[in-house]
View 1 (cartoon, rainbow, N blue to C red):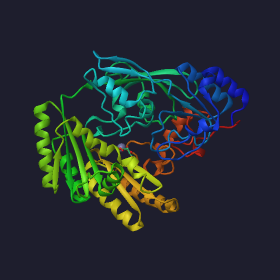
View 2 (view 1 turned 180 degrees about the vertical axis):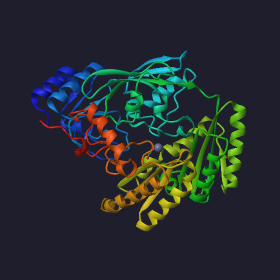
View 3 (view 1 turned 90 degrees about the vertical axis):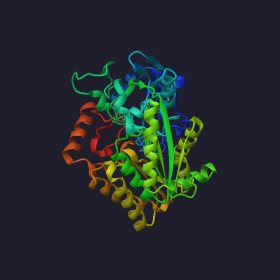
View 4 (view 1 turned 60 degrees about the horizontal axis):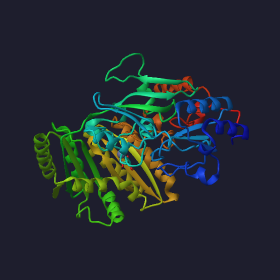
Amino acid sequence: MLKSPVLKELEKIVGRTNLFTDAEELVVYSYDATRQESLPWAVARPATAREVSDIILLANRERFPVVPRGAGTGMSGGSVPASGGLVLSFERMNRILEIDVQNRMAVAEPGVITGDLQAEVEARRLFYPPDPASHQFCTLGGNVAECAGGLRAVKYGVTRDYILGLEVVLPTGEIIETGARTLKSVAGYDLTRLIVGSEGTLGVVTKIIVKLLPLPESIQTLAAYFPDIRSAAQAVATITASAIVPRALELIDGGALRAVENYLKQDISHGSGAMLLVEVDGPLAVSASEIETLERICREAGAAMVKRATNKVEQDQLWKIRRSISPALYTIKPRKINEDIVVPPSRVPDIIAEVQEIAKRYGLLIVTFGHAGDGNIHVNILIEDEELPIAEKTVKEVFAAVVRMEGSISGEHGIGLSKASYLPMEVGKHALEAMKKIKRALDPNNILNPGKIFLNAECGVRSAE
Ligand code: MLT
Ligand code: ZN
């Protein structure tokens, strides 16, 4: 709990109207998209890096946890205040500060909604490629914290590939700038890359410089309907081995299709057992010929039907199916364990077969979908509460298979709370110790987002609450 003199100091920093302590307000900041929840002791809504810095200095003096939070759309409990403490909410730091058309860069505060930045730059014929499925709600700061990926990562990469520089408040209160407003910089250690994906454990991001691309001239989208997931996965392997790099190559299995059908009350699967959504972009002549080839590959792999979107409305309808999967799956069972494993693209058919075998063996309902083009598959285990212990065993087996295939247990959601106990399965002892040394060096009192990435006890120094 925060004592009243500390609350008074916080109030002085952010102003009375930007400090919440009432239970009904705290609930709003207690959970993320995993539905894990834990009440914070208070919530502050800073407006500047200076205010963030003052809060962090206070947190070190009084030793209370600080948990940065964007929109709470995360998928690994990264913004859940698991040890209580103060949530720092960035809803007031939500301005796009600059769009530099000439140099193709933008500068934004962490609370900007990703979809708003995408729309603003597209109005200037520029393009911000990272595209998490939750782009209409998630924030840029959250994307930076988790190094979000999304639908276009197969061609364009993930958030870290577009971050040129950051303003960061360190866990000891200093405000630093990392990177540069240039496309290249090798001046010293790459602190930008260290902070991106550090899940709010190494610093609080207060300003973000992103790189932009020219807006592609054309986009072509197709949906291919397969009798089963095996043939769809085979088409993925053929496409990823071809000379074409689609900007999206998404796989949706039969279970996910049926869930979305129930959710949207529409026939979207046309009786198929799996679907691929494939999108290419670039000069019209190139995208038109690439989509032809991709259609042929899908048909040869066994697609019974291929539908091409002929205009933007049809494209949006196809992507609405994809973006509806996550909410749709919550209507099937009360609990959903959502993993974001990633394997080398050629192993997609293998990992899918292995997951199916594991599901059968444990008698659990597992749905798979996701960014198959870059090998990043969302394995969703749908369970009743009492099935949790068996689901955890299942997760361990899936992760073991992933590591065997030289993959990673998290492609884009981060380790957060959900995967902290599994991280050692992938990361070797010495590498893990190196990570903890970085954490301890930057955050000696373990005040910043404790219990994320590493189990709390492993980095804990905090006392004096
Ligand atoms: C997605 O790609 O849809 C998200 O990363 C995962 C999810 O929403 O389940
Ligand atoms: Zn995803």
